[in-house]
Image (cartoon, rainbow, N blue to C red):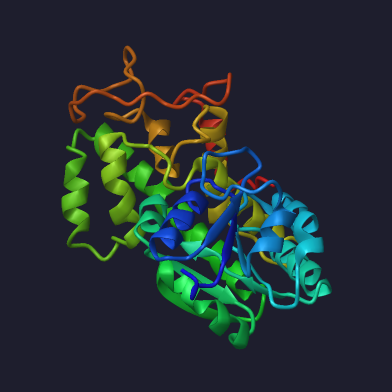
Length: 326
């Protein structure tokens, strides 16, 4: 362990907590901080203390506001030898502001969003997109390698942020239309598992469909990537193109469906819970007249309620097709 770079993890959510565990298993000395205290080894008192006791700092905070708050809190502890890596999906403007704050202290910054969910993080198989100088990446590479299966340089600071937003736009649209496709089959009396069989031999299949379709069929909406976080990322996409003379109607429609899921109280669930909009087998709590006899059998899963205003499958206004949610 004495030969390993010391690492600070700030943000112990679904991903950050698992990255801390992976790094410890790989022999790295890891110090952590989270806004809400956790029973974690070397849980320190503040972001500043994390900076004072580590060399590389990885940030897994929720959004841009949290990112800038944490950077202000740890700034006085930063040194020229530090590398600060932001893994949260934030706006390009917030990424550049974060880099500026770190540079003011003489430290180095990398823009490092990732793809991969809870299970990939636990297995050390994330894919990192990198924005920043090659020389800084090479210094940070051993730490990133411990929790990843691929490290993909994308260009200057900010480029990786754009890539991450773009890939999430694609994922949200695919899962949204997958939920609609299952509803089409359900209303047509076709067993839903037949879509899985068909897609296995169809060019329309994709990585996200392969990952999410079994969850939707099983009603398993335990969060790998939550509704609220995907909605946040689509809001970033829509705001980023404002005054750039383009429109994103498909992304706007996907954001509308996610807004409906938030209003229904599914914000903490995986964004595969868009399936619940259509009330086919296992997708919603069992209620009279909601589950068709033509759908697959099985006990439905209960949702995690975070709202007092449930949405009905008939509330088509929640889907927000071709509307911009900002």
